[in-house]
Each structure stands twice: as structure tokens, then as C-alpha cells.
Length: 149
Image (cartoon, rainbow, N blue to C red; front, top):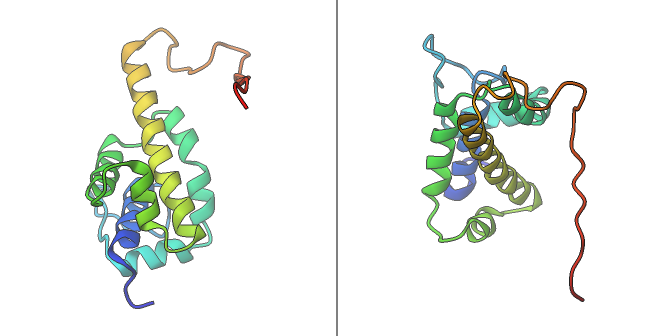
């Protein structure tokens, strides 16, 4: 594909911003900012053997406070530039296949997660002493009850 539809390109550029500094296929300037966010850069990133592993490590990077806010802001600005009102409409608009739809949903989820973690960290700064969970507790279990038919 020479050039994808504009919405697909925007989502891939957002992923590129988010993974800059963690994905080896993304070239950085000496200032650690992205070198280029072109379609060719996105293709190189997606074809990288480490691309999926880099995506899977994003949550841990957010939890550890190692996800640069500038990268998340740049990714969010790109996603916000998609012309539609709701997140669901934007995902539908960018969905040119199941992979595109999943990647769009993943980007919105990562940005929402980063926002929530940042707000919680700011509000409770110092309480956990840089540990998101009390000692010995590594995860919480969420039980959901279905209501209605």
C-alpha cells in the first residue's frame, strides 16, 4: 500500500509517538524526540520484530512512570484530530480492517489508562512511595456483577 487512508495513518502515527524511545525501529533525534512520523516510518515500525512486544510493555511503562507525557500528549492530539464526536465513532472511522479497529481501541485505552494513572499519581503522590501496590500485593481482582436481562 502506497499510502493508507488518512485516519489509519493518524492512528499509526499516534502509536509511533507512544512507542518512541521504547521501540528500536523508531529513529530518534539526539533530544529523544521522534525523527520522522511519515508513512514509511510507520511501515518500518509495524514490520519490526519487536513491535508487538513493545506494545505489550506499554502498560508496565505507564505503571513505572516511564511513559513520557509529551509522547502521550502528541498521540492524543493526533487522535483528537480525527473528525468525529465520540471515541467509538473515531474507532469505526479508522477501522479499515479488524487490525486497524483493534489498534485504534488500544490507542484510546492506553491514553485513558495513562491519564488515569497520572491523575491518581498526582493526587496521591508520596503515599505509595513510587510503588503502585502495597508490598506483597501485585494485583487486584475486580468482580463485576451483571445486572438486568
